[in-house]
Amino acid sequence: MATGIARKVLYIRLPVWKIWPGGVVYLADFIHKQRPSIEQEILDLAVIPPRERSVRLRQRLESLQPDVVAFSWRNMQTFGPHPESDALDVVMNYDHSLNPWRRAKAAWDAIGIIWDYAGARLRNLGYLRLVRKLLPDARIVVGGTAVSIFGKFIVEKCPPDCVVVVGEGEEAMLSVVDGYATPAGNHYYKDASGRIEHRPGEEDFDLSRLTAVDFAYIESIFPAFSEYVGGTIGVQTKRGCPFQCHFCLYNRIEGGRQRYRDPVEVGKEIETLNKVYGVNSIWFTDAQFCSTLRSMRQVEKILDELLARQVDVRWTGYLRLNHLTPEIARKMLASGLVSIDLSFTGTQDIVDSLRLGYDLEQQMDAFKLFKDAGHRDQKVKLYMPLNAPGETTDTLRATIGRIRQLYALFGRENVLPFIFFIGVQPDTPIERELIDRGYLKQGYDPLTLNPFKIKKLLYNPKPLGGLIGRAYIEALDQLGDKSEEGGDYIGRATMEILERKLAALPAVEPSPKPAPLPGRRTCPDAS
Image (cartoon, rainbow, N blue to C red; front, side, top):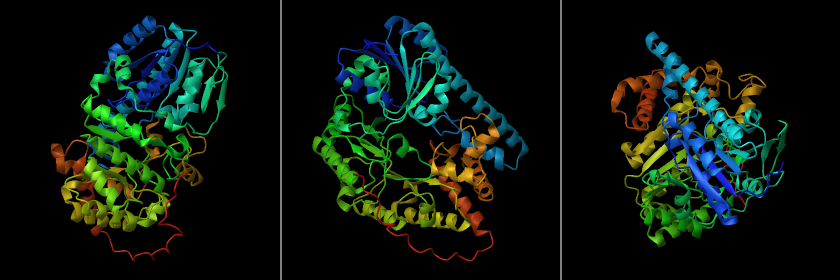
């Protein structure tokens, strides 16, 4: 039912590790510019001690008496990697350690991780129920990355009159504050009687409406604002992804058509952060900062803005290098690029099987463009989906060989191979493939707390799983406390140990080189 035009909105960022709440900030800024008479406030539970969160939330609800309470929920799966989780180490030790005591400890640690995540889910849902108890007439909105992925599971556990937003939130939130009975955008709605409806929708919000954030206003409604300006701030330049990567959900959450913010507004936003608030670290939060030919043109305009405004920032984001040119590489380095972050594997076969949509030789050529453009000590971060479907000992050897080429090009200390395994997400191509193969059961619960099922969702099957796992454990033992924060050296050490283990295996006749795929060197250009 409609609740009438809202007078007050409280945004609640549910607990997560300390990371800039960019989605909430963009949304609150947009609503303020469209409906300036509405009073808004942002309550960030991430920076409040756990024992104080319920009390602080209750205080703000009772004091502000908002008409709309909007929750932002970022992470939900137990294996979701983040800076405060050692889940990968735990799984590796449980599955592959030869030390029984170490395996027992890993099992205990795994129970602790699952217990923590289960408790976090229950507490988050408890915060929603607290709102409904204290403010029976308020409309509740729930959005964020986790909800965009698991919305149909979460809405069943939400209190009545709750809107669960999938993907973009601007149009949905604007319709809610305007009192519409049926919100706009892609969402699930649980009405007062508990009946659930799903309104699908294309992601087509006009990003030109997202002008530079009014940080003075955000500072006035966000008490925790000052706690973030000393760290990395996320800036979004576009939404949508035309690629169909095997394990990724961006094209479902944001749509397949890329839409762009005005580069001038992006430049203004970063200039304000840098010159007014002293922010000098920027992470571009796009699915990929540069990817298609058209997006590369927008990237160049943004770089031109940064250079013209003479901002002193260090920036990075996920990159796709298909359309890199010498001039853009030069501008990236000149404007403050601090690291080259990208998905990496050493054979075209794996690139193609994961539908990553790029040509490996083209990627290697792009690395040389950075070197020629004046690369100094910028890090090259390689996010490697090891043991993906189609991985063999030969493809592992090829990946190690490519890494060594990059060591020679940039210096070993500047190349950081990051080990990760594909996390199976709902409604992705890899999920459908694994169900068809019988690896997963049809109708399985992606939010299960069963540890053995969770391990299957972190895809690292036999026989290569054990080989990689034992190399990782040996690297942990070898490095001890000497590993840099974030695992900078653990990836290098693991790959070098893996190289030694592979060399000890019997030689295998190389497979015939597959014929090039039609158009493989040309990536899609979003309209």
